[in-house]
Length: 558
Ligand SMILES: Cc1cc2nc3c(=O)[nH]c(=O)nc-3n(C[C@H](O)[C@H](O)[C@H](O)COP(=O)(O)OP(=O)(O)OC[C@H]3O[C@@H](n4cnc5c(N)ncnc54)[C@H](O)[C@@H]3O)c2cc1C
Ligand code: SF4
Image (cartoon, rainbow, N blue to C red; front, top):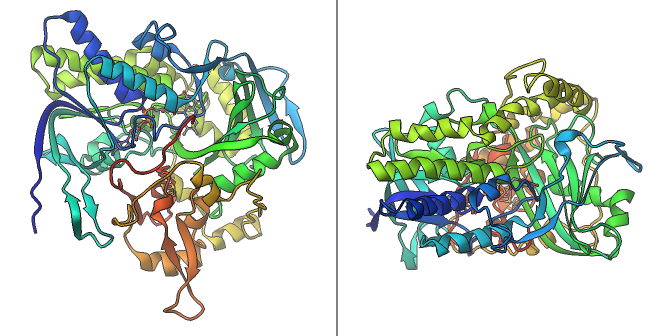
């Protein structure tokens, strides 16, 4: 039965109220106000989190350049900055030991930056946007990108009140169709509409190297005073990963008694038991970490992927009726692991283009193309270009990576290889047989004992993310073929989803219908929306789609 849907019309539809989407809305309203000769175009800004910031998670050390350009008096206006960076260190961790680098690699210097909680910052930015007269619709999730005759025409929001089997319940509310002259995707990392855009409009990624991701696991801890100062920034490489694996850890002093700590794990790993959550829990067992966290209390947990492919992995930023900003477009400086300032700058550049479009009434592709050009020529575009080959430097492991990254710094980012090919992350995963052949052993995922006071199992951690999903709804993890999961994947890879999901959504249980066999069982209500499964599944049969709006994590202080 065809469902009747409300149709709303707007000028500009922004999907995602993270730094990119909020900066766009604020700057556009500001330009209109300052100009005084043009009416504010209608802006519809939506976010799938239950409040703005509910799905914002970052390290985070912020380079203030983007925010200072957007709101020069951000400090006077009370932007929530935890602390200015007061000290920087870079530490190599072996199994038990630690060596502090005698000098700070220049790209990792954080003088002038701020330790922040992204979710507090986006909450504050939302207030600034609303004070400019723009409404934000939190709890509204974009389900499908609408493309007609090659032109993006808007978004259909998600249906609410469906039962597990997809049949409508008494509270069924069909999603609306929001038609817009321009849809701006500010969905953040591996956006579900951004993925649809790439599928429906292949030219968007025709010249891009596949994107590459890390899964970042984060906990916020209250710790005894005297261990880490407010504003102290510590980056680590090494333990618990080997030098062949991409990633590293951090401790950021939010106050004298509260730290953000986490570990990022590359998804281009050969290991089918790669488990970012398990690695982070081991990380905390290192003596260096124990000295900081012992006796403290874990307050918050979260996980999210980070797009680190760089400049050559970015899609085209413009199409008819479409702009893409921020992490959705892969605008992240992988060398610094920073994207907040770049996301804000992309929102500013998009606003400037849309302001001209509103003034002239010209929303054509030609008019929108200015956004791509002006972003590319801006300090943000130049920053991304200068680190364009950073991620590929580490293709041969940490030590080769340090060498290549050094060469890149000497050659303006080019290094020895420019635009080195990179496969999609899931293509790096080896089957168990291939792994045995290559490493002469089975994958050895170290077992961590979770005491749930210092090291936490996934379910306890999920509880600390405030995640909520209505049980009665279709699974938002759509498995195209369960047979593959329960037969081929079990034999070939040993069901890596049970390892790579940091929220225990994928579990392997006894199959009552097949003697001595097991099957995959899902608990979608645990999902923290990190998107790892959609990226890392070796058969690409898992599709992450949005659940009902307002569900998922409810991050605070993350
Ligand atoms: C572990 C980790 C550590 C990091 N550390 C740092 C750091 O120290 N410094 C730094 O500068 N950067 C850091 N980053 C990167 C930084 O967080 C991002 O670059 C930045 O948040 C990107 O902003 P954005 O607006 O593009 O996307 P996001 O901040 O991800 O915001 C996207 C928004 O879109 C919403 N959304 C997504 N899909 C939909 C949909 N279909 N419908 C409706 N709403 C939707 C989401 O709910 C979210 O609120 C880190 C990231 C991670 C994960
Ligand atoms: S189900 Fe997928 S998106 Fe959700 S937490 Fe697990 S890996 Fe992340």
